[in-house]
Amino acid sequence: MPTSTQDADQLRVGVVGAHGNVGREICAAVRAADGMRLVAEVDQGVPMQDLVDNGAQIIVDFTHPDVVMDNLAFCIDRGIHCVVGTTGFTDERLATLTERLGSKPDVGVLVAPNFAIGAVLMMRFAEMAAKFYESTEIIELHHPGKADAPSGTATRTARMIGAARQDAGLDAMPDATSTQLDGARGAEVDGVRVHAVRLRGLVAHQEVIFGTEGETLTVRHDSMSRTSFVPGVLLGVRNIAAHPGLTVGIEPLMGLD
Ligand SMILES: NC(=O)C1=CN([C@@H]2O[C@H](COP(=O)(O)OP(=O)(O)OC[C@H]3O[C@@H](n4cnc5c(N)ncnc54)[C@H](OP(=O)(O)O)[C@@H]3O)[C@@H](O)[C@H]2O)C=CC1
Ligand SMILES: O=C(O)C1=N[C@H](C(=O)O)C[C@H](O)C1
Image (cartoon, rainbow, N blue to C red; front, side, top):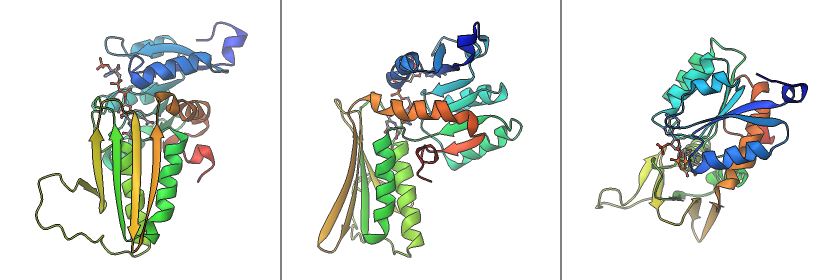
């Protein structure tokens, strides 16, 4: 609830997961950004009701796949727009959100597996390359505190590559493996092998390796710091109210779709 004319011009933003690795960076960025004000910092032990009591118009969620759906239900039902970085979004979860948004047609929810501009470009470049190569595998590399494997970014990249291969009529990838230890060939997502590395010292990294007779191509992105996610999140915060309904990925906000 704005208290002055100056406040009335500001987007009132709440961060959920405010004490986490990414949440801390987002709080600092919102505090420093023109045209927005940080009105609530929710984390374990701080109730979601704080968002309502402090008049949040938009939330940014970087929490955990186990809790994000409840957080979003709370916000959607109260007419609060949501910018969501938390991973774990299956088609079923996205359908649940769309259904919930049906009764709140003015509310916008942006779910993006990766807010780093370079990661979005990496996915797009990989999608473009996919039809030209017989083989493609993905290696994602993250800090050891990550809950989910493979990463949301790797899953999305694999699905984009799988769709591009299908559109191009490519056959399954060549692979003569006939004996293996469980997990040695990674997880399969839409026909694409995905390998997950968890290593102290890393932040968030991904390589997409393409191969065909006589050549390979590697497309790689590195988030060296969690500040890499900030510009994409602020882009979402500034634009989400003008995009009611569910938006997946920041591509449309970057002018890529
Ligand atoms: N889309 C993107 O660009 C990116 C997405 N991510 C994703 O964002 C999520 C968070 O990542 P990260 O910041 O590294 O994780 P952290 O574990 O560092 O932070 C999550 C924070 O949320 C808190 N939390 C857990 N449950 C709740 C709840 N019910 N209500 C409020 N707060 C809660 C945690 O508290 P506690 O630790 O006490 O449980 C913690 O402070 C992950 O799913 C990750 O994959 C990460 C980076 C970029
Ligand atoms: O947990 C992380 O750290 C990250 N999660 C997202 C994912 O699963 O893709 C985005 C980025 O890779 C960092």
